[in-house]
Amino acid sequence: MTIVVIYERAPPLQIIELIRSLLRARTDQLLIVAGLIFLSIAIIGKLPGGPEVDERGRNFGLVFGVILLVTGLAMIVPGGPIGFDADDGTPTPTHVSPTETVTLPPTQVQPTEIVTPSVGSYPQGFDESGFTDPESAISAHFRALKKQSFTSVLTANREDATMKVEIEADPETRRVHKVWWNNGSIESELYYDSGSVAVRTPGDQGFDSDVPSYVAAAYLEGQLDWFTYSNLSNRQVHRQQGRTVISYFVTSTREDRYHEGELTITANGLVVQYNLRVETGQREFFVQYRTTDLGETTVEEPDWVDEGE
Image (cartoon, rainbow, N blue to C red; front, side, top):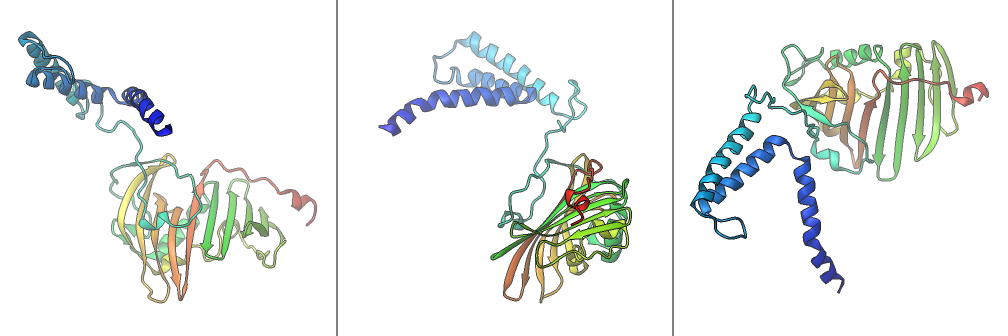
């Protein structure tokens, strides 16, 4: 009985969805579809599911259909008479490697738009085919850390544990707040303020309080070691968070420590995202890194610093 009721209500829902789709469609698409409908009337001689039309109606369908079709096609041609560009600004999903679908926690990824790379757009240590010098590429990342504030999250998942490190950093105030989570509980926390360092360790392990600089505080030691023995391929160029970024597919060059995934960098070499599936011996785990709020992050002093913990 329930199935019959759902089936009987289906046509109105389909009509509503059709109307919604038409309202969301671009003008050029609507004109092209309408033109094809009128042309089909001129050719077939009848309305879809309706009565036949006379010769005058077929002639009208032919003329009106041609006008609508030509107008719609003209609107999608770059520099056409209507003045529309080929790219209407509609974002397309970012390139995602097969490892993106693994057991990593859901993350909001900013919509991206495919663009054509310009000459000389590759940062130090990179070119169209991948790395030219991995060490130079990592150095470029360190330099880029000094230029704008950011929020980043590094997550490592394996079957029996989850580790997460959250970092907020602002080079203008020279402040960094870094929190290390282990299976949902805070393992350690670090606050850097213009050379002054405060650390607390609720768990069994902790951050080192010997932090010589802002960059050292803003960086997680060993975070980019994967890429010192990686090959890059399948370059993609996107618009992400309002800036041009370049992504590569990553594979390991070592047989004893295999990994594969995706690396995304900005035009000045800042690493803003990577996803990796890592195999070491009999163990497999997944690493995900995201940088957000570039230039918009403010670092506040944690309450526990005032409490002297």
